[in-house]
Image (cartoon, rainbow, N blue to C red; front, side):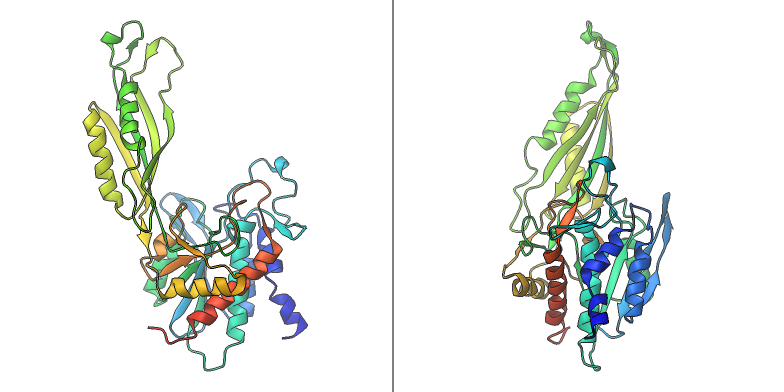
Length: 391
């Protein structure tokens, strides 16, 4: 490999170019241009897929494929990032992509621009090392709408792919899955997420004459206790128990001597695959009905629980991780949601990326050595996946 090509296939430099794009959701800020230019130069056929609608701003996405045969192994991820917050609290500018003491700093370094760069470099290096008769394809599905409402991103790209004959046979998502060290954990599923808002109605009155009013607050407290005081199940072999967390309570009442006419709260439930969104809605309503009184309940399910059973995909990823790091990763379903919740309807999916300790934080950063190792892991995943005949 020539020195020029070796420098071109440096995941650190590509990570820095991506981080320098301030792509706070839904802005792309040139991040996908950087990635597309790199991929196109190395033979990928690229499709830019902007989507809008549903009352949200337009979001840019990228699907790129190298090769025309199946199986098609897909790497999925996102180039959008969360806001930086108070920039004055950062010790380095968040979009400078500074390197200090074997660490790359910047918003998106961990979540997940360095993983996207590692995908791209690993795919190119692997493909260039294959014989001309190699049968198979490698693709990247990269969205700009993962950190936001996720309406115009991966879900719509997958529908476009299905409509245009772009099938994928397995997928690895590059979310930062490792708690402490590279090689700790692979995600083979995710809990579902349900967010509810309950408004309890009463009758306003004077606090000195509570018998003439109907205070909604005690009923609201009982309703919340009915779902949040204990886990909603005991979990199972692959998932922890389903938990409800109250995130806000408000009555909008500035007066200390007035009983309010209504009170509301918001809660979030992360649920395992013993429930669906619909079954959990029914359970919440049953428990609220048992308290009694008039109330309104709004519920939104942003993702269902899912599990990709341990099998060939997790075996290939685990072997690649162990080969590079010497660590045998745990197969887990912990954490929040990711775009894997959309991909699981199309093919087996797993997740593996960098260490997540600094994601979304001030001075987000990752080790330089971990980025090199991650690119090597992704290349080893491809070697393992394409080493045997695929179904």
